[in-house]
Length: 250
Image (cartoon, rainbow, N blue to C red; front, top):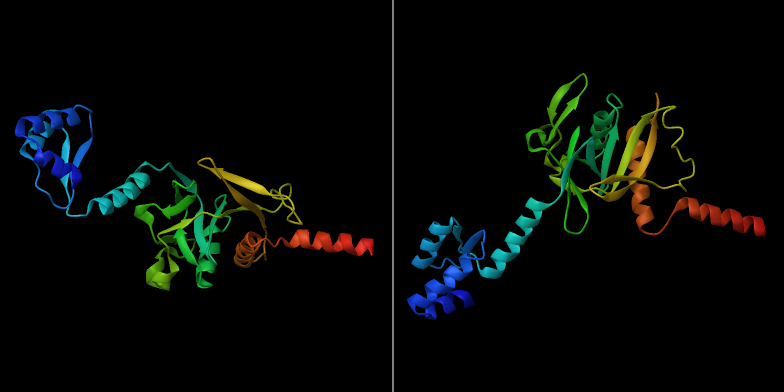
């Protein structure tokens, strides 16, 4: 309103001068908010300099706020990661591993336990302005899963809309490895911390050994619950270590 009132108060010759000075700054576009009429001088300058002129009925502050969110999303760093992403007990879990390790089957079991699918097989990661990683599915395959022996399923049609999420913050990575391959990275106590990096952001990583008879669904659920517990400040291995030391001093 202030800029519009200022330009409206100027004589036509002065207004043309001010508008030409504005367009001389190589601006990408001009937006008129509140549905205000576009000055004829602006139309002429825009056609001459090939600048887009937009108009919206939104109040200026609402438009700026909305446009800022859109621009941040459009310019956010992105990458694609092969793996399945789930929301497990409110925790964003990315499950990765070689083909045939049971990622989708594990995700299916988690869905049947009441958790939600974000993306299957290929996950799109985006780093927001706060440095958080947000995971989502590629638009073509969103809400679809491939299950060996069954084929392609549409998750919300089978399990309901509560079984899917459009986007979720990535909190932890679970890497599935065959028994033997994972032995070198396995931590029996949980004292050692592993990290996985995407787009310059480090995410806690847990390596789980895959072997016949192991309940991967239960293990992933437990890992998510343990992650939430650690956020509250309680780390079981440290508590146990403290108790053992106290026991030996008594």
